[in-house]
Image (tube, rainbow, N blue to C red; front, side, top):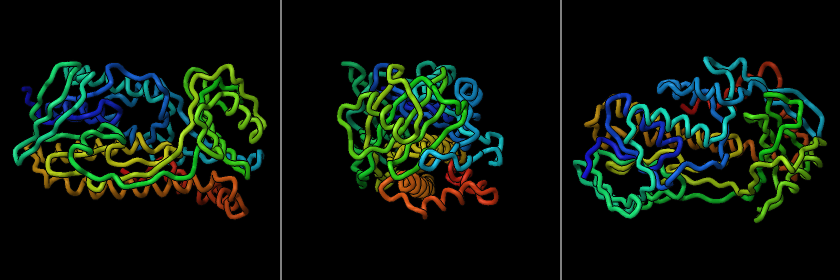
Amino acid sequence: MKNVDVVIVGGGPTGLFLASLLLQSGIKCSVLEQRPKPTTHSRSIGVHPPSLERLASIGVAEHILKAGVIIRNGLAFIDGRPVGALTFDRCPGPYPFVVSLPQFQTEAILENRLDELDPHALWRDTRVTHIEGDENGVAVRALQGDQEVEIRAKFVVGCDGRNSTVRELSGLSFPGKDYDDTYMMGDFQDSTDFGPDAAIFLGKAGVVECFPLPAGLRRWVAKTDGLISDPHPDQLVSIIGQRTRLVVDSQTNSMISSFRVSKFQASRMCMGRILLAGDAAHVISPIGGQGMNLGWLDAYALFEVFSKNGRNASPSAFKPYSASRGRAYRRARHHSELNMWLGRGSSFNPLKTGLVHLMLSPLVQPFFAKQFTMRGLE
């Protein structure tokens, strides 16, 4: 049996970041990750300013800036006509921008930092099978490959995604629902002249968004009329052409997917010595790019509790964490719902047009820029 202060279940962005924070402060931890090797699927791409500020505390923000694309402006179009740009330059520093970087590259940077702090902290190919807690600590049993292992810790943190084993074993409910909204997403060689800017195309046909990626790529996201079971690049290219009049080469596609968005929130983020963070605690629509960042903000808030109370923190010390991060999730969810509402073409009307022009007006723009860069969700 191995003894540590904290067992983190899940070696994605949230778990890797939390582990580095804890190790830097002298709190021993192990990260149990079910995947035997890292994934190369692109998934999330946006790293927002509040996250960059916290990622800087473990020395990885500059690596992310160097590897990613810095987005300072979001160009807006209605029915194919340009109506203005939302700029982030007037947002609070030191990072008045969003960084675009595929999630697998962000995870690699975080994993390298964790390896520098403790090359034995990450346990891959490890599946948790049992969690048993008492007033003094928690015992975690798992299968590492075919070998059964057991770790004793003072706390367990579930950072293991929307299908969290930690949440399931703890008996916490996860109420929520799927929205009706569906989308198609794909990465292609960038053939636009937008450079490092993002762009959003609104209109009665439905929203199309695009974001620059490293290596001369661009991600496209389009509202669809239903979930497409076997998406093909040509389908997305056709939608892009119809709604934006832009030409994208389907032969340059490197990733394609179709998805339905949903919202879920755990009934509690703390139960005794079992804690939840990231998608294990709450699932949000990816429209707006907040999910991965919410996980990092959760991780930093957990770290602050450990830092303030030391490795002998009591379970009661985490109750404010659960309440505050629950409020942050609800605010982020409302923001994502606003984004989805704007993108629903069937209800695009003068009210939405007026709201877009209001967002882009000089006096009001800084407020909306802060909302889009997740200020206030720390």
